[in-house]
Length: 230
Image 1 (cartoon, rainbow, N blue to C red):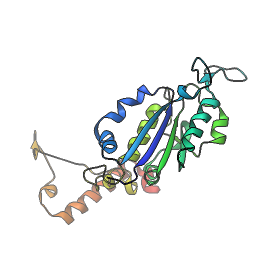
Image 2 (cartoon, one colour):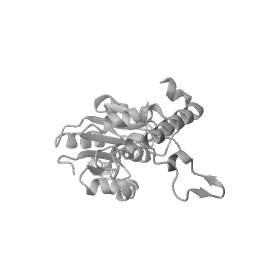
Image 3 (cartoon, rainbow, N blue to C red):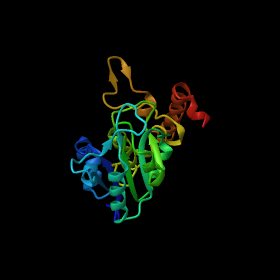
């Protein structure tokens, strides 16, 4: 158990959308084990509007609604009054593309804020005043940043020491060292005429490691040659 767990504060106007995601499997165990505190904040609790609105029409016209700066600023400043944050992250399609290098780096931080965009996004002044990092999970548009925030949180939390049962597991995932993971097998050793490679049954650890590296290299060269170029 960590003496000081990582803290991730997620700001959203749809908090119930996140409840189930963090209540199961590895993410639940990470919180129960004291490795991370994930706190979801309902943006509507911070608005000055009596109807709890957090959005308005865009200046200059156009379709869609824009998230207002006031509730976001109030929420972020309330959190900053309690602790210092290493990054304030905005999930947005025009942010930097999320990759393993970024999640490795963020997993070494102590306190993070993740702001979930919605509607047509946030008032640009939010980005100018508060945001230190903008992240996209891909070249497509979602209804909001909640799912993207879940993806980012999962990718970070599983890297925290002690979260996974086998700490070497995260180090052998795809994209670590810019390689895709090699093929994996389990019982039975033969199924409908398809056998597990003999090397994996040999018990020769050094040769197995060599085979896995060669397989990872081959798979990366075939499927994602751009990773090898990096």
